[in-house]
Structure formats: structure tokens, C-alpha cells
Length: 177
Image (cartoon, rainbow, N blue to C red; front, side, top):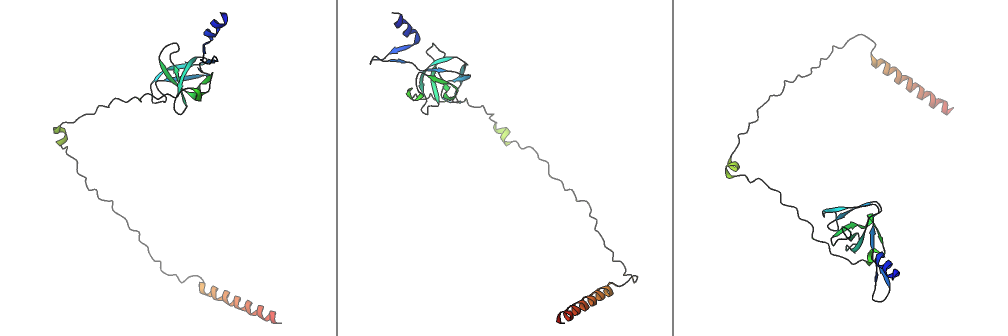
């Protein structure tokens, strides 16, 4: 009798084949938001903190969300993200796949409806004005008078050319000897 009572307290259920199986339980290591459906678009129902647990009822089609009994001990249901919890007493694939409830629709945003007089009213607009550009100053260049002072540069060029030719002739003559 004590064994039966202990098994009942532990949450063990008898299968028709006579084997014993525990109901899978979700255990929260840190914290997890409980939502009305499998996704962040659903309303948040509450939070499970570190160490809390809840019976697992099912999973989403993609096995990334787990449906739990929330609050624990009630007939309500909630969904937790599978990455943030640990499933004990079975694998996530062993849970039945549940269909997600319809996503919540947002209430329509009120829009001001202008009346016909407001639509036809034309407010005067200011016409653009012409602003003249500031006057430009033009740069002028003066040609200086050529000066007759100094040594003409053409003489230097001719002297250097003559020295170059003389050097080239000397190189050729030395090479032939």
C-alpha cells in the first residue's frame, strides 16, 4: 500500500501494458517567459523562475516550443521556449505535436478623417524671391617689361651644348685608339 501511495505522489501512471512511465516535466534552470502561444508575438502570461517546474503537455510543430500546464496545478496552458528549459522524463520528440492558437490581431489605429472643407482649403504659399549673386572680381595680370639686365640664358645653354659635343667627340676618339 505504501508503494502505491508513493508512486501516486511521484506522479507515476500505469500504462495498459503494465509498464510505468512518468509524465514529462519542464524544469527551469534560470527563468523562462510563459506565453499564450509558441512565439514571441503571443502575449506573455507569466514567468517561471529558477527551479520551478510544470507538466509538459505537448510541443510545437518545429519542436522549439513546449506547451505546459500553467499555472501548475490548474487547467490553463502556456508555452515556453525549449532552449530556455530542461525537459525531464522524456524527449521533446515524444511529446504530441500541438497546433498553435491563432496569433493575436492588433486593434486598428484610429485615423483622423478630414472633412471636405479641410480638403478643399488652399493655404497661400509664399513665392520664391530672386536674390542676385554678389559681384565678381576678375583677376588681372600685368606683363612686366623685359629687362636688359643680367646674363642672357641662351649663352649658357649654347656653352653647355658645346661642352657636351666636345665630350662626345673625345669619347669616340679614345675608343678608336
